[in-house]
Amino acid sequence: MVYFYTKERNMIVFPKAKINIGLHITRKRPDGYHDIETIFYPVNFTDALEFTESEEGENGDRFTETGIATGCPSDDNLVMKALRLLRDKYSFPILNIHLHKAIPSGAGLGGGSSDAAFLLKSVTRHYNLEANEEMDKAMALEIGSDCPFFIDSAPSFASGRGELLKPVTPVLAGYYLVLLNPGVGISTGDAYRNSSPSIPENSLQKLFNDPPESWKESVFNDFEDYAFKVHPVIGELKSELYNSGAIFSLMSGSGSSVFGIFKSKPSLTGILKLCLIWEGSL
Image (cartoon, rainbow, N blue to C red; front, side):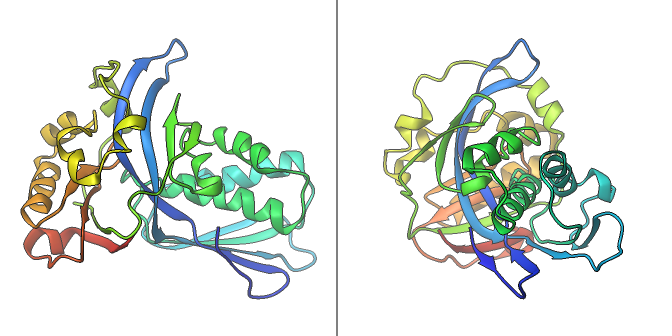
């Protein structure tokens, strides 16, 4: 995690996005959740999250945001849910929190979960609260299934609901990522309801050890079929990335963002340039 301190009572952190290298829905659980397997891979595409201590006499934590609109009331933002979890367990100063959103919401990139996880870890570390990484991850799981991943944001094979994490080798180091978003939304609930859980022939944990150049024929996202039917533009973006020289392309999470992995920086034109939200080295 990268910290930038402005003053003793101020902190700014930069919550990262993630992409999913493959996503298999393996079964629907009795509790209504689904078991999955996926590779969570961090991306240096970030929001900015700042907290400062309130002036003496101010009552209650305050939350403000700028950048891309999240479309939810402040009290419903996952950052504030994380803060309330901490307040239930620990004592620390009243905070003013500001979030600048660059990662689109509901885009399969985990931006909201990342914001919440970075708030949890930042506050516990800044105020030396009696919490370790495992305690942070346990609190993060109360917020969302992918939230524990963002506590350390290390490339990981995820199973269960997405909370069972095993580190993997960062095999994409040095490759170039192009990240696109077509500006359409997909309901995660609808995506799961239209899925057909099954045990994959080959686990992503094994396939991830193969060269990225081979993934096109073996690594898949079980949400893509539904997403491409509802919003054909998502499938069009994937095809155009391959036409532009990507060695691998996939929709991330339940959508609607699509990424392409290249050996070097490509020249983007047309719809790829129009839908670009981030590009850079991994």
